[in-house]
Length: 95
Image (cartoon, rainbow, N blue to C red; front, top):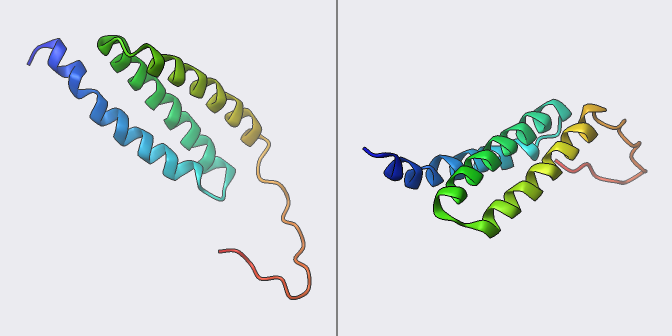
């Protein structure tokens, strides 16, 4: 298999990594969200490599912007989860 074919196929692992990252950032715990944002950064790199191969300049720009947002999210989540707010009388939990 030549390099061109491998780079064409790179979009599939990039998509899978993106889906795993989206699942992780939806976690309730900051640690899992941080892992999710790092996973998103890995997917950003995969998409950029694929985009360079395919000359998809808008995709590359998008992934660079999303990578910046993911770095920001990591720093925000490093502070940990905020304290739970007390429930008001009659309020139902969201689970």
